[in-house]
Amino acid sequence: MKNLAFAFAAQGISLLLSVFMSLVVPKILGVAAYGYWQLFLFYTSYVGFCHLGLNDGIYLRNGGRRFGELDAPLLGTQLRLSAAGQFVLGAAISLAAWFFVEDSQRRLALVLAAAYMVVYNAVGFLGYAFQSTNHTRWYSVSVMADKVFFLVCVLVLAFFRPSHFAIFALLYVCGKLVALVYCCLRGRKIVFAPGVRLRTALEEMKANIAAGLPLMFANIASTLILGLGRFTVDRRWGIEAFGKFSFSLSLTNFFLLFISQVSMVLFPALRRAGPDSLKKYSRMLRSGLGILLPAVLLAYIPMKYLLGLWLPQYRESLRYLALLLPLCTFDGKTQLLCTTYLKVLRKERLLLRINLLACGVSAVLSVMGAFLWNNIYAVVLSMVAAVAFRSFLAEYFLYRIMKIPFLRNILAEFFLAAAFMALSWFLDSWLALAGYLILYLVYLLLFRRQAGELAAFAKQLLKGKKAPAQNHLQ
Image (cartoon, rainbow, N blue to C red):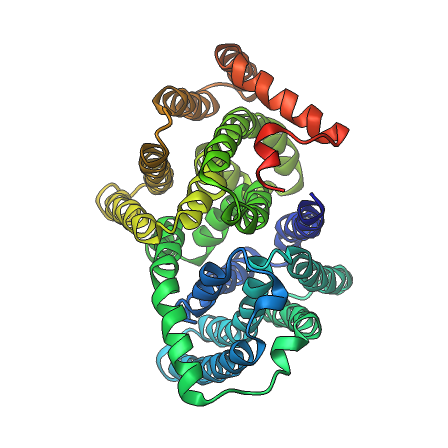
């Protein structure tokens, strides 16, 4: 619970920053400049894969250990070798961008993303070591330091109203540098440990990469499910359409930030749990997510009304949001429940196959929507369909492994999501809200037993008592 408190505090600050960036930066920058800012963020969302699975392997192979049990000299040598490799790769990307990218703004976005890559992957190395040994509080504080620094800088910039995206991107890199300094201080046992023989370090890196590569590719495929749609929009309709489309996607990410933090805290605890408690806890998580995630969709109409007043030039983005918001239901459940459990069960290759299938569905449907039907809304629907398909596959395989029925729940959630999209698209805003609220209340009535179990579990937590599923995780 302490780890969760720190994780939520870190993501609370991240959420505040995300809200501020989503609501204020579009007001400061023009539509085109905001599009390049979103392009920079799009590039940075993939730099975490340039460590070739090393960080993921450390996370998986050390999950459940104590921090004092880590081989600090061996990890420290790997960290230094990894940082050197990232620096060389960053320099190569910058040179390639300088000579082969004609658009100066895109070129600058790539160079700054390459600089961010070097710092981000060093933070990721130490952060994964902290998370795998249940020191998620250290990682959470590094996130807070990063975001607070950047938030303060953006607040100052709001008074000067710069018209170029590069100043925001540069400060974004500096914020990650602040996080790196904190991680180095917390992980000084690793950072300043004496080195080991190069051959020994390279052999260990090879073992970590072999373990982490399937998970890294699974994460790449997961990111590409939405990334391919964004890339298609940029290629087909240009930077301004890309910026508006990315704005609506950033709104869906607010809630998913919290989901990712809960999964980060759960992983090391679940690695120490026995098979019986894994099964019991998965039932509780499934019930909780089934009740809470569809409720997020109720926020759409108030959000649409308020944001329409504040950012009238992004009204089209809010129309996309009616179709994109169900991502919170499907992607949130996949991240917290399915992905976490498949990693605990060491089913990374199964996770990779699931994500690759969904990525293929997204690619085919996005290209058809953009170039066959020439309809940006078809691209949006293709992304949601691919994420929903991934959610169904992940739950099917996970619950087949754990021998838990799930079909009734997921069919009801699919119906709720489809009803929300249809109501929000075809009806007047407040009438759509009333219609979806009625359907959600009927849904709660049908699954009242799960709702009761969730309420009882929350009550026990608030009273400080141990719930049955929780006993196995202490």
